[in-house]
Amino acid sequence: MNWYILYCLKWKMDKLVKQLNQHDGIDAFIPQLEYYRRDIDGYAYKPLFANYVFVKASIDQRSFDLLLSHMIEVRDDIIAQLKYEEVSALREEEVRLLEQLLDGSHVLRMSKAVLKENRAKVYEGPLKRFEKNIKKVDKHNRLAYLDIAFMNREIQAGLVITG
Image: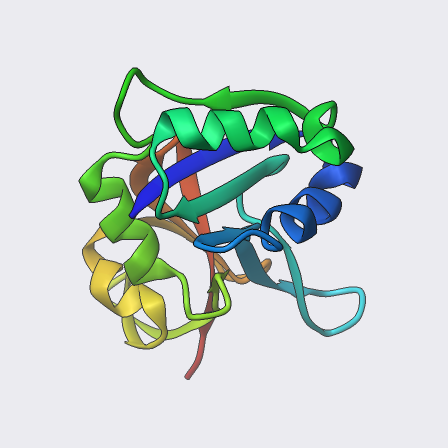
């Protein structure tokens, strides 16, 4: 499976995903972050990587480029494609990281933890595997900041401190 990453305008992302998913062998999605919103005292979702659409496809780079060039309805919505010559846009370890963090709906769900000796001890959620990578916890906004860079950005994840 090859991975492709498309950069587009925020308000065009859903349209692009819908159009790409009409083609066989393509799974286009917008990775989402589940986070706590104090104003509604509940959880909401936002793109994990603003303006990026991720695509898993069984076709190679040349075929994918050809497909995009023939998709007149979305061709102008794409600003850029993150790509390297003849290889997938994501390295193997980046693909594994995404697969470990995201659920089947492509959402990075909230995790739950307790604080022990000023460290978060995660007992539920995707951060359980990445407990050692948590470099900062924002209890007020219920966020964890990880020391893992992905697409040249640090990853944030929702984290509730209980007890």
